Image (tube, rainbow, N blue to C red; front, top):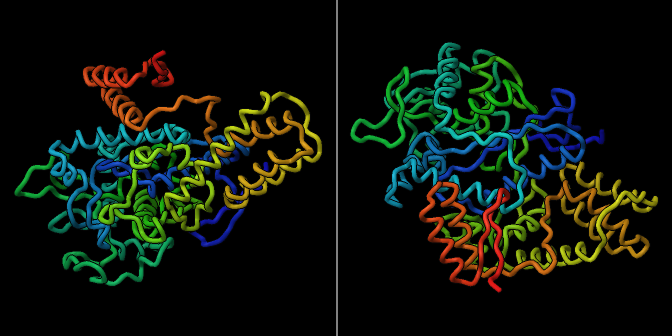
Length: 471
């Protein structure tokens, strides 16, 4: 097995990966909050998670991959420095769109899963929704209560950080959270014993009924944001597993709280051996934000003539732990490069079992060195381009090399003379797929007719929608 080097946020060091259980690797990635379309900033994190899974499989590991879908409990206050205040994002979206929170969650979950497929991301063995695991979350809060790490105040049940530390646990290893001062960004809740304490279970407001609320030993309410990931990851991967992935915005609060909850409830350490955090995606050199109007979605990119495959290639041009700057020009460059790669690959013969000459094997060694050097995908791409341009290699050697490395990259290669589909038809296809996922057959048939009126014929298959132009 080739050694894999990775940067562990927990130790702040580059380490050689050693799985807990031989060649079996458990991986958990923090997924989306399904209250709106996923931004290309969030998609970068999920694409990085895909890279980790692909590289580990390429190296011969057996991977159990889990990703959560947050459809309750994520409050708007996390943008202000306190994830225990503000409005539930699902409830906020309900007011924005005039639907109930369950319908909001279902719609944007379907959109996320459609985008996941269009980006050619490896499907996790388990997508776990927070609302499907209320029982497990309540059970973990009860375990924390039994172990003496909770207390009750007016708006919910809270985790007691000082009690946790008094029992010999470390808190906030991933960040400087232990140095946070009350009132630094928001007014401190005076009922909290410590500004670092956080909600495990929130009580429903007495003056309104929520769409999403459940009975619990402490009263009617809903889970805090952090508890879902601790409860679901341990359910599917065990009390200890290998790798946890997320964006750098989760490193200071959400992930330290996950650790505290899991280790406080189970008594086993470490909860996760390796923590990997992807850096922010910038837009034109500045931050991305919905309030700035630049939190672009896949739909925004498609409306400008770009495919999810172009975005996927763009992500590979940057190191995951470094900020990557998105501009329309940089996306255009990625599109041009991916199309040129497609054209080159399509000009080569089909791969066979021809043995590589020594120079060809050297390319594989260099490629392996790149991907195992903390997932240095820009360098891996450079090696691929170099081998494809090497006049000393035969076309057969080039296509054989490509067949070997492609699974680790996940780059989509366009088929020869791939059908050009207008942006408006792309949008209708996405809407129809969402309708089919929701089993809204009436809307699905209506959208099929609209697509046909644009000059295209649809065929539904086990692998998805297939489209061709009317002759």
